[in-house]
Each structure stands twice: as structure tokens, then as C-alpha cells.
Amino acid sequence: MSKKPRLCIYPKDVEIILDLSPRQAYRRYQTVKDAYGKLKHQELTFREFAEYYGLPLGDVYDKLQP
Image (cartoon, rainbow, N blue to C red; front, side, top):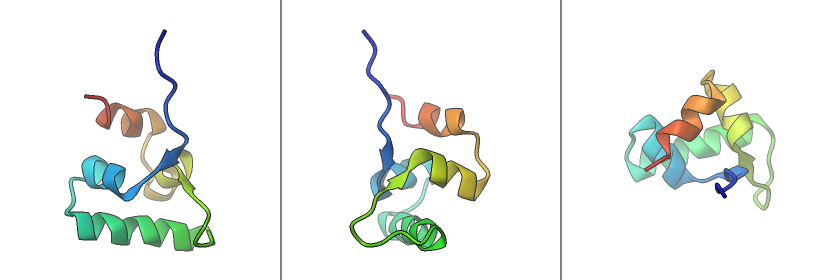
């Protein structure tokens, strides 16, 4: 039985996907949250992140696989 992919993305994921430093990854994460008008307690989804950067969603998930 395979694991289902997570729904929410975190700055650590952005760090891996875009090959950034932790600080830069957090800034990019916040930029996308701001663009979607997310409040502090609201999470960002992989789909929103991929759409904002124009990345294929499958490629984003593939980059996080070990």
C-alpha cells in the first residue's frame, strides 16, 4: 500500500524543490502565501505552489521522493 502524498507544502519542501537556502525558501513560501491572500493560520497546498511558479505538480512531488 503506497502512501498518499501530503496536501500541504512547507518551507523545507520549497528548500528542496527549488534548491534554496532555508531563509530564501521561507521568503518564497511567504511570497506565495501572500499572493493567495492566506492568513497566518492557513496552509499552502502543493497545487497552489506549483501553479504560482508554473511548475508541473507531478514534478514537484517527484523532486521530494527519496
